[in-house]
Image (spheres, rainbow, N blue to C red):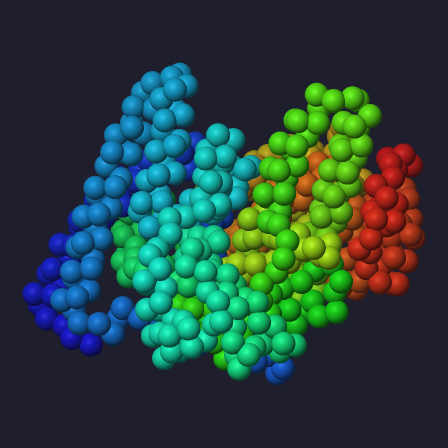
Amino acid sequence: RHSSSGASSGFRSAGWIAAGAAGVAGGVVAVGMRQYGVTLSDLFPAKREVHEIPAELAIPIPPLGDNVHPMDGTPWWFRLYVTTKRAVHLIYTFVPFAAVSLAVTIFDKDADLREYWLAMMVRTLETAGCSFQKFGQWLSMRPDLFPPDVIEALSKLRNDAPEHPYEHTRRSIHESFGKEIEDIFETFSDKPVASGTIAQVYRARLRPEYEMEGGVRDVAVKVRHPHVVQESYVDTTLLFEALDFVGAVLLRTSQPFDKHAFNLALQKQVDLKWEAYNLQLFASNFYGEVDIKFPQVSAGLVSDSVMIESWINGKVVQDIFTELENNFVAVERKAGEAVQAFSKEVMQQKVRLAQIVFDMNMKMFLRDNYVHGDLHGGNLMAADDGSLTVFDAGLTCRLADDIAAPFGYFLQAMCTGNVDRVVEKLIQFNDAPIDPKVDLSGFKEEMHDIVGRYAVKGTMNSPDGRPINMGEMVGHMLQVMQKHNLRLRGDIAVTVMTMAISESLIRQLDPDFDLVRSSLPYFVRFRSWSRAQTDLTGESWEEERAAANQGLPTGQDYAAKKARQVTTMH
């Protein structure tokens, strides 16, 4: 690696330029984060654990090295050029948005101006590149912490990102495998079927000599966008410079998560070998499942920039319900009987998908401790055979072994309104030094208010008798923790965020789904709780324990049983 005093001086200058560019945008984001009680530890893990590799996996776990980015091997002058060019681009991109953001703050009653600002926010993040798009996606997954119009605007980043030219796709495939597209594929569409933050996807058909196990030849080809590697290298520095400025000047706090952990997470996102590894690991974990599937990955055709997976026939979940809702509006003008029939069909499909998503999540969390970290409707496909196929597995999370069991009891305490245990576990999960001035009694009192607002102690119900909204309750807890200078450790924070994403999807599919009551047999089965209702009074829960012992429920029969109203609990 080359270095010189001139290079160091140049990097420092570029760093100040970078800090200025990112600081303008960061300051705007920071004001909103402060207003709505968001901490960055909610968004990024401070520690990432590596899952044990099953021997049968064809694709080995990709090496992470000692936090070495591919750009680190390039000459210093090239890195200086890329950094300066990127900083100038971000200044040009974010300054107009910062100006409009200031106007929105001043004229906060102007609805038209705010609508313009929301659209501009999405365009700005798309123009800024993959790192900022991914950051916007993470923000959009926290509806409990941000205003609804911001969540709705940012959710557009999860649909389609700008496409790259076909020539880049041809070049990437040749550089990865030493062959032209025509040598590997019989057919290859020159138009992508989808484009995401990191890569875009094409439909193709493999030549017989490259077919996957089972004779699979119809495939989806995922190709990484150009400049993603360069952007991820520069943006890490820019983001941390901005966070240092925002924390010291605007929020008066220290940097809330670990740079090393962030680099590892971003490195996994831009290296498609990691996604291939995750998909085959998930497929191994869910081997034999009827309702939950993962694409098959070609072990011989995978690189850091190209991945080939089996093509699945079906429709993306979020597209299905957009289509259903539009059809419902059309049918609504007809006879009431037709409307009721269509409504019933829609609800049945939604309820079934909610049950499948919930079943998958509980197994990932409690059985495997290896969880898909980006589970929204755009990453799920309802296949023609009625199963649900999961895509885009570049982001995963898991709890460290020493904290998995305490976290389970934390969830149990929230479900049953046991405030003392909730407070005990939150303090255990705190990774910030506890200031002697912290008012722990005040913290506990506020937690009493929050838990009482969402859960009746000794039951699994909210005060209004409806299912407990875990996402909202945890969101308020995070706000109180920030107020008292407490901070969740990284793996807990990212797990909580992932759970909030999953709960949001499940409630979108079935607003009446009772996640708390439905989770009981999973805790009994996978965490060996002999008496999962330790803090409960009333019903014995024999039916749920029996279901757990006989095999976990996945069908509509059990979904109907668990949805019954319990009136004997006090």
